[in-house]
Image 1 (spheres, one colour):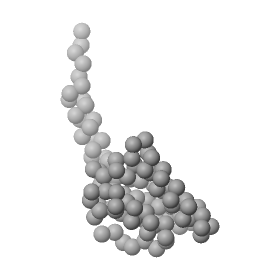
Image 2 (cartoon, one colour):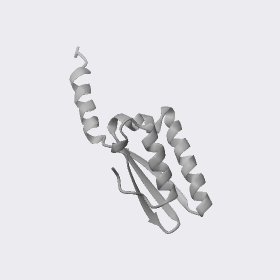
Image 3 (cartoon, helix red, strand yellow):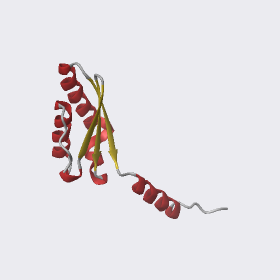
Length: 106
């Protein structure tokens, strides 16, 4: 379970993300405040990143709109970064592609 976040925007992001994913225990929300600017960082499991981003980024855009609306009431600006543990999956994809996608040389 992640540490509790202090701002209403962080609480909203934590709640929405946990409802979207299959593994709510893997959701981690961190926040950094710099004056009136709030930066939220959402980390989810590798299998759930598509559920948070959505097709064409529609769900991520909707989450950002909700956060912006909540932050505007307080007079702050907010940004959202979505992250997952992709380094190992990228390496697996590269090795798979290099093994299976070899073209014959003529």
